[in-house]
Length: 572
Image: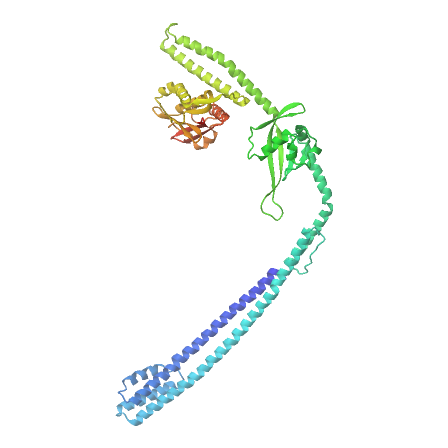
């Protein structure tokens, strides 16, 4: 029989008996209640009425209450013959009251009352015996039902836990033996129930484990050889470390870039190898760092050729059998060869630098020619010619600005940013930016409001590049501000740094684009402003190259605030 069936039958039968016990108790309690009420209502009241009427006859009063008690007794005639006695009592009472209260009639009244009391007392005794019999039957049935419940419950208490716990204990012992590599262990449950099914499944599992244990070594060796072949055929250098940083595998490409043989690395601590190998030491330093940026490339000499590699670190975590938390079991270092992409990037940078440099000469010549055309000594220009010259001048300025940005970008991409960090007055940087943008601000009737705190007078910065950044920020603020508005340039000290703030009250930047404003070639969609999208990217590179930071805060429709933070000159 199945365990579930046993539990259902046992608990179900016990439930039925408990319900039956409750029903028996309720039924017999109801019977006892009826018997008791019959005694009280039928006979006890008649005895009380008879007793009170008897007292009235002995007191020789006017029998005022006798009439009332007699009327109640006539309404309470419940025993056989009681109605007849009530009529005789009524007749004697009427005769006594109409015949001048004869002693003979009074004697008849008393005899009738005694007979009435005797009848009801006998009825009370009979009904009391019936109630006693009902109580005895209730006791017997409740005892029988309770005994049956006890026997069933006791049987379940003795047999059910052992029927469930004994197979579980046996199965637990067998599992522990299997865990101890004793794969010949078997369990035998003959019952045709859940434990029997579990025993069959367990024995099947143990048999398969025994078969696997006898053959897994060869399989593991084949799997190990296959994995080693896959790793060796990878074109990227791969180094595997365990949780203690010991080298567990390397491929041929890794041996080439490190200049070491696999026998010199596998099985040895990478920290010990780093003492004599600069590349391994650099890889371990990057392994310790929390984040490896994609632009952090490694320049490595391999096979007599210089190459560029990006490092990727994969931390291997597994959940051990029977556990819930992950456990670090090793690291995989992968060097991806990006030499080809780097060479293409260099070629692009050189091309842009060359083209931009070549553009500057004709653009400068164009500006000089435009200045000559504007000189009145050469001749006066009519209104249409003046408009054409003004348009050409704007286009030339725009081309010159784009060319300068491209040259700056090539400088950034090549990593050849030339910095001349000096103790630079803050006023010099701010005044240059304001002067460079004053005409543009006057055109839109924008007020440039400068606020410089006295404590922030000197800053450690490259004056030229920082002024270029401030000029670019101020130009953007003017472009995106409304006419007749205000732009605030605020410079103040914050700890050991100096904060440059350029705040406008223009259209602002939508929140979904805030994280992209410093990306190269990015322009906020829908602004319809001229530009290459390089200004903020170059500004970010220039400021970070000086050890500073730049960030933006903006609320769409309210305005934007660009903040540049640089180191303050330490005072003695």
